[in-house]
Length: 313
Image (tube, rainbow, N blue to C red; front, side, top):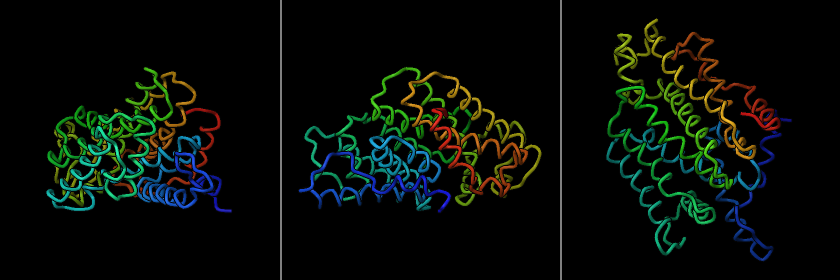
């Protein structure tokens, strides 16, 4: 048996969020295909969050995969093209799609014939999700395309809050959890994950000639943008990584210290993957260019499962 089989069997079948009858079998098949499409997108491009999502309650799993797929699509825009105008057009497509979803007279026929867009419409209508949170996800990517860098570590925190935390806020809405502590945990975990994503993407960003590490920290340790683009490891470069990673870890520990409703802990499982990456980074002495950082951790699925069982993140 495959070591991940205990997780992947959950995916078969991934039911649509709505109830269907035997007479609606054709429609159900189409729905299931759309959900599987969303699941495959997340599995291919956001594997760690995919694994964590599989461990959610059945009623939450499918809408969560739709939200994750939507986020993957807008996050990948920058990687799919080097042309700024093309990237802007693609983000505008999703901005228009969200606008259509929240039109006064909601009608799925008005939504683009895109499986993610169609399923997002159903999730938004079913759960009454907040439009502004979806718009934040899009706007954060658009702002990064325009600026192409972060001046300060606080700018990265703001980007993380806008590009990651909204997913957790929306998942809390799907769970029906309206709790201040849960919101605070979502904010801190989003920041921790967003900052960690920046650290993980340093080598990838270099392919786009883009330095995403904060300029103020680079200047503090006399590290040039050219050093980052050329993947030059040095003591000063490691100091930069340490300072940024410390901020991510601070938010992670803060999120974990907050008492949240038990039902909401399942959506915070990505904290395990964040913790594992930061631990690996520490083991390689904060060398962001060490190949070990980009190798999948085989114990992650089991740690996710264990923490899901004991209701911790």
